[in-house]
Structure formats: structure tokens, C-alpha cells
Length: 427
Image (cartoon, rainbow, N blue to C red; front, side, top):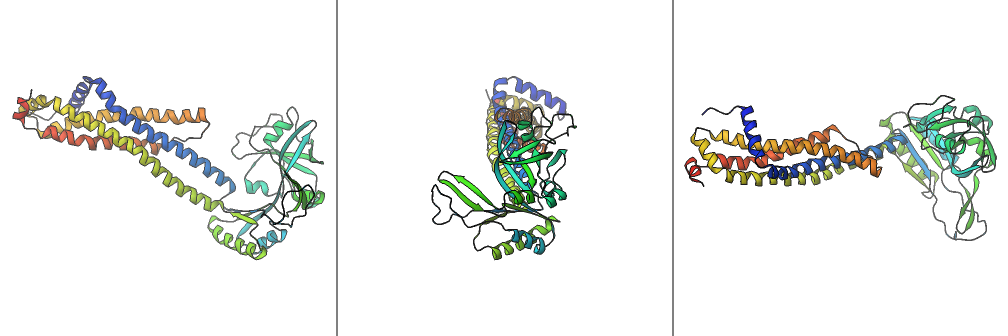
């Protein structure tokens, strides 16, 4: 008997499986759920990873972020009177020394970050007011949507101008063009000269169109303007009353010329701060280090998710092996007849492996479809970011087929190794 042609072998395998539709469907469930879980888990993990990476990237891989940190002081319990608190946090001297002594420094961006009530006509909104320098926009990589950002002229003359975030513009200035309008920040008047939005925002609007609704609702003013109006002292309200605090700089962003110079620059920053501060009233955030940590976390996360999902595939493979063993027992006489007619052991092995392949491929394809639908549903209903990737589909499908074939080899070999005479006698 000649070897059976591949197309004939496929038709025979489909015919054999169609005789037991319910059994074949239940057998495929293990593969379907396994592939589906692999794709869905990796998609959710990839989506979360991308969101974290984007947030870190927004900080700038070439940036070093330094923030003032308040250290609890003795005897500063609650009370209704003003209590002078020793100044803490970053100093102007820190920024000056870093500009001089930190190697490969491209830019230094000082900031005061305050929370004020902003008002336009009868509309009010509590928001963050950032007193900073003109190069803040480039360092933070925000998008200028209308007008202009702060300039050196604004800094030199202490101009009472401000730039607002697109969300703040939508809320406070709905029905008005913000450019040129007067915005009251606490009790001080500032003229709006520009609108900025997040970097992720899309197409820019023209001057006569409604601006896009971004997440940015901050107000940006020149640092010198704020210092001339308010200085470094401010009142901090809490449940026990109010306290008088003095912070020269809330934050300082240092931008290094190249990524490979960041580590060296961070070492210099730490030395300067340790020398100038007796207490650690500051924190240093290095986005480049966070990116590397996130990548390592992503790798471990994918390994864990993949291992969990692989268990489902193994269970599916065991299910296929059990069903094929039952099939071999039921078709013992058929195997004996085929051997008696000249079929070789290899033909028997290939026939049963073909049936296993059809089950695993069919289940894998259905699993891929469900694996693509579930992350989309999660994104839609739970507002959780997911990301479908080609490697997730390839890995899930390849592993499912491989596992099925591996578990299908034993039943196929068992069928091929039967004694033809004994098989013919089987009732």
C-alpha cells in the first residue's frame, strides 16, 4: 500500500473528527482558553507597561528631577496661630551651583509649584500654578496650541502674563477666546498669552476653532513675576490652622545633553545637595533609571503571565492526549485493517498527528479571535489600556500547536505499535 497523499490524509482526519463533533469541540476548549488567556494576559500587561513607559518618557530620559521634601519638625503640632517654620527644600544656590558644576548640563529649569484659586469673570477653579522659565515648555515637551509661551522678555521685566492648559481654557473660557483675557490668580491679574496641551494631543486647531480637550489644566507664569509679587514666603493651610513656610524652589529639572551622561550628572547632583543640605529635604528622580526598572519589571511580568497562561495550554494538550488515547482504543480494528492492507507505522502516526493538528489549529484560531476581542472589551468597558501585539499572537499560536503535537505523539505511536493480528481480533 502506497503512502497516503497529504490532502487525502487531511480529508480523512476531518471525516474522522466530524463523527464525534461534541468530543472534538470539548477537546478544543482547552486549546481555545489557553490561547485566549495567553493573548489577553500579554495584551493587558503590554498595555499597562506602555502606559507606565509613556509617563516615564514624558519626564524625559535625559532629565533629572529634584523636588523639595518637607521633613516633620519637632514642636510643629496643630494650633490656630501662625507659626514660623524654618525654610526647607531646594535653594537658589543649589540651582546656581548645579548650573556651574554638573557636567554635560544642557538646561536647568527651576520651578515653584503652588495651588491657587483662578477666576475668569464668575467662573472659578482650583488649579496648580507653576512659576517657571521660558525653556520649561521644551523640557516638558508640551505642545503649544495657541499663542505663545513665556519668553525671556517676560522673565527680565517680570511681565504679568500667563499660559494656561487646554482643559483649564475649556472650563473657564468656554464661549470666549482666552488669548488676551485677564485671568485672576488668587488676587493678582495676569494676561493670557498662550494655551498648551499634552504631547499626546493630536491635530492643532486654528485660531478660530475650538481647542482640543487635553488633560493639562495648569497655569504657567514667569518665575520672576511671582517673586516680585509674592516672594518666597507663603501661607500653608491645614486642619490645625495655618503655618508660614519659606521654600525657594519646589522643583528643579536638569537636562543633560546625552543619555550616556545622565549617571555621571546624577552623581554630581547628589554631591552638591549633600554638601548644601544638613537634612535630606529633597528627593531625586531619574527617569532613565525608572525606564530601566520598568523594562526589567515588564520582562518579569511577561514571564509570570506567560507561565500562568502556559498552564492552560498544557491542560489543553493533556485533554487532546486523553481524547486521542480513547480514539485509538475505539479504532483498534480500523488500525488493524489498515496495517493488514499495507499501511506502514509511519502512516498511522501521521494520520493521528494530522487529527491532533486539526484540533489544535482550529482551537488556536478561535482562541486568537477571542484573545483579540477580550482586551478590546476590557478597554471599552473598564477603561483600562491594553495593547495587542503580533508577538503575543505568534507565541500563543505556536506554543498551542507545539504542545498539542507533543501530547499527540504518544497516542499516535501507541496506535502505530499495535500488532496487526491482535488489532484485527479486537471487537
